Image (cartoon, rainbow, N blue to C red):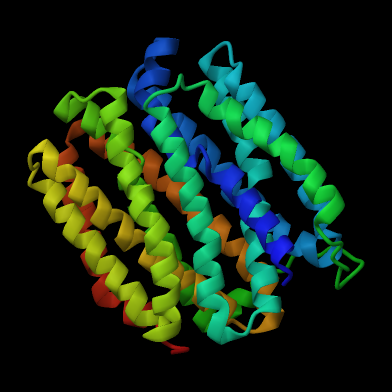
Length: 374
């Protein structure tokens, strides 16, 4: 892969990720502006994630049949327009619609990146390349979270809209055309799931994503209601998860190449369990920062390890696997956010306890889910 092509992919990933994490941190501010409850405003999270996950199923097969450059131009233009709609929303329903559209068109970036990395990099270097790519998305997410603490929430949607429009000429002139493998568009997700390794791997991805997002996306409400923190403090705490994630993706990618995919995945989930344990104890505010750092490292170690494992799959499954990775993560994450909201409304401690036990169970039983190939 040419360096400029990889840079463009990283820039796309950064624009996509700028307000993904920030949206959760902005829930209290959005609720105040539109005069709704925080749990009602929290729909801006899963109304993005579930459409994203469903739309992602189409982009891997589309890249096989159509020029990826044209797909990216259309999707980035549409994604930027959806962000503009969000920035100038007059009511909460308009914001919900904008988030839905952002999910549909933003889902194209990650499958394309994974496909191109798998096709252009040897297995001994894929972890490093994937780590750098996802590190760029976490840097953007970090910036978005930081700015969400000092800028009006509407600007957090306006900035990626402008950035996306500015990136369009660079894609048009410098992103190479990608010759499709097949002229006829087709989708076949039945065949990959006949493979026991793939079925078990995506079962694991579904569970870990549901648990992570089910907890992560309600942290801002937890800090607001349980610690009475303001928007700046909330954004800075969640920013720490992205800050550690920048290093976690890069280090996790290197560890995947050096010590192996499985050990990296397990190390990540152990760190996540430790973080949840400390959240249950409801420690003083100054300890929360350290907990958020460990939580971010745990998630990104796990994410980098699993993502690298996906690029090791046989080529005939690559396009579907790349789409399924985004789809399963976001659909399960959206379900996790919606379901956990019902639990968190009653008791955050009960919610954290349930999620911690589930993470521990996943660690104990993950040998049955992801070790067949390794």
